[in-house]
Every structure is written in structure tokens, then in C-alpha cells.
Length: 258
Ligand code: MF3
Ligand code: CO
Ligand code: CO
Image 1 (cartoon, rainbow, N blue to C red):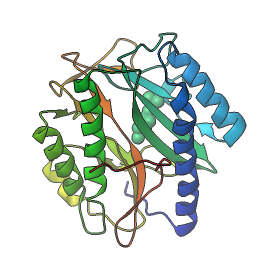
Image 2 (cartoon, rainbow, N blue to C red):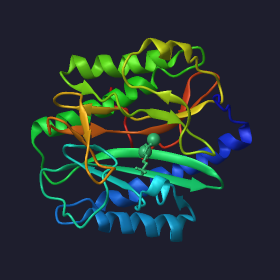
Image 3 (cartoon, rainbow, N blue to C red):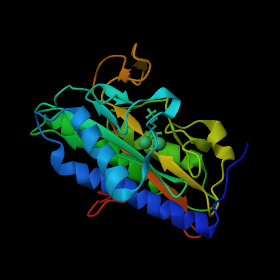
């Protein structure tokens, strides 16, 4: 097992897949409103992927997951299952989209604020987004995944937030989850992972307002904060270039906001 460096031809396919994953989030954006169910969002995303884009929803059937997106509301950390539950004003929700196009994956997620949300909820979403970009900005040849993790962790802690340890980013390409694991907290072994041009991986920090511990619900998928405080996550798929990084899943008008 080792980290797969992508050829220029494979990089071009990942660029296409990444753009298409971002397009799904852009398509969903106006639909994320009070009263919509997460299953309706799932259905819209599924139809757009399969009928408009000609992409395959990577989560559908993945280890038995039965939906085409993940929808994680409020205290849900990740892998929320779309259902007939309606979004309500004040909710925060992460929507995570992974498409396969021409054999390659694009994986991205973002937070949405449903109607007007409490200032502390909005702030958590902003800090989690900043954590993602603090991590991304460390990416360049000869930096290590430790640098990425440390930048994320320091920004979270400086803002009195915690970092989830049980779930991480990942290499990505022809497979959904490849080596390396991309931890979002500092851990000495991440110093061994030296970045090289052609590596492709995700960064996807899960940031909690309260304690970092999580719990898996009885459905076998839904991960919640143990203390039931809010959690927020943003994810991009990126490439290590000769001089730094290229984000494959950038959305139109997305600002790093640092
Ligand atoms: N998209 C998630 C990730 O960022 C994985 C979801 S797997 C699922 O890695 F099965 F829960 F959909
Ligand atoms: Co991912
Ligand atoms: Co994802």
C-alpha cells in the first residue's frame, strides 16, 4: 500500500470530477431552505448527477450506504442519512457530495445556514471553513501532513473549538478512499507523510463547538457529538502542484476568507 501519484492525464480527469462535485453543491444551494426534506435534496442531487452530469454518486451503495449525498444537521458530525426530516430555520447542515466521472472521484462538502441562525452557529461554520483553508494553505511539495493538521488544530483551539479525531481526510483518485489518511489534529506520525507533486487528497476537518468526542448512532452511519453540541465541516479535494496546490472542488465565488 502506498500513495498513488497521478499522471497529468489522471489529474485532468480529477479536475473534471472535482468541478462536477462542486457544481452539485452550487445546484443545491438555492434549495436549502426551511421546510425542504433532506431526502428531497438527495433526490435532486441524484437526478442531477445521473441525468444531467452523467456522473455516478459514489456514496450510493458504498459499504451499504443507501443515498447519493450525506446530510449532517446540527449535532451530526458526518455521514447523516437523507430522510423525510424537514430542515427548519436556525439549523446548520453539511451536505457532502462525491461523484465519479470517467473513473475518478471528486469529493466536497460545505455548510449551509437554514434561514437565520444563531450567531454562535454561524461563527462555528465560519471557523470550520477557515480551518479548511488554513490546512489547504500549508500544501506544497516538501511540506508534511503534520503542517496541515497543526494549522487546522491551532485555528480551532484559538477559537475555543475542538477537532474530531475519529474521522479524517483521505487520498482520492480511482478509489474513493486511498492512502494517505489526512488527520486534522497534530500527531507525530503525520510528519512522515511528505507532500509531492501529483498527490491528490481531501482535507475535511470536523470542528465542534463543545467536546471533540463523537458517538455512532444505531443506524450504523450517523455520527453525532457525544455532548450533542454543534459540529461543522467543509471539504475540498486538492492536488499538490510543483509550487503549492490546486483545489479541484472550488465553487464559483468561494472566498478563502482568511
Ligand atoms: N464523502 C465522505 C468523505 O468525505 C464519505 C461518505 S461515505 C458514506 O469521505 F458512505 F457515508 F457516504
Ligand atoms: Co472525503
Ligand atoms: Co466527502
